[in-house]
Each structure stands twice: as structure tokens, then as C-alpha cells.
Image (cartoon, rainbow, N blue to C red; front, side, top):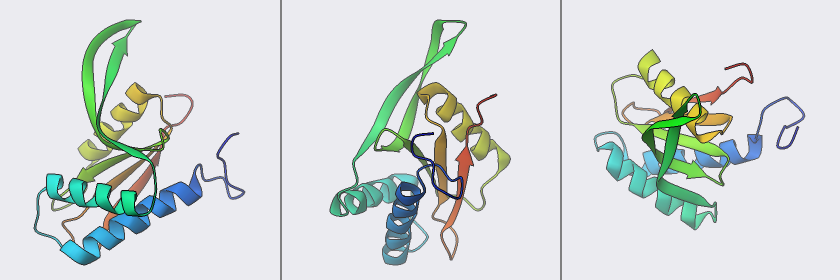
Length: 132
């Protein structure tokens, strides 16, 4: 499988680099800002690290072969990893479900849910299973 690390993690190095960039943003800005501020700061950090990304990419949602709507992704890194940014008290199941929906719509298999509102950066790595 392309991108699969020896320990079974898909795009392990790339996801670790993204998390490292988010940690740097969190270290510099601390909690207290909106998601948009963190998004802009993260894109600066990704750019400084020469990690390719797109911001606010639109993906279409299909139902039985027909377009039923669009999703706007916060950040997609190297066309492989969706990064959904939050500035919330805690990550809930609804946030995870949202990211899973984005993964399905984009045909990506891996996503990172990153929350900047805690004293320590909170993140979850979500893998879209083949049977979803």
C-alpha cells in the first residue's frame, strides 16, 4: 500500500510533520483565538517547513453518482491528509463525524482533527476504513 509505514500508519512522517507544525503554532499563539487565526498561522508554519498544502479547498459530495452539495476543507496537505482545525472546549464525536464526512467526500483516507483551545494541543488521527 502506498504511503504505509512499517508500523501500519499511513503517511506517518507527513502526519507527524503536520502535528509538529500545529504544536509550534500552539506554542506561539496559545489558546484563545478563533479557528481562522490558527488556520492562517498553521499555513504560514507549513509554508516555512516547505510542506505543500491547500486552504479552503472545495470538494463535492456525491449521492448515488449525483452531486448533492459541497464541503470546504480547512486545510489539505499534499493532497493526502485533511486537517480539520478547531478552537473548542473539547473534541466531540460530531467533530470526528464531520472529518469522516470530509474524508469520504475527498477520497482521502487520513485526517487530523486538531484543537487549539486546550493548554496542550489536542489532536486525533482518523483513518477512513475501506469499508466505509
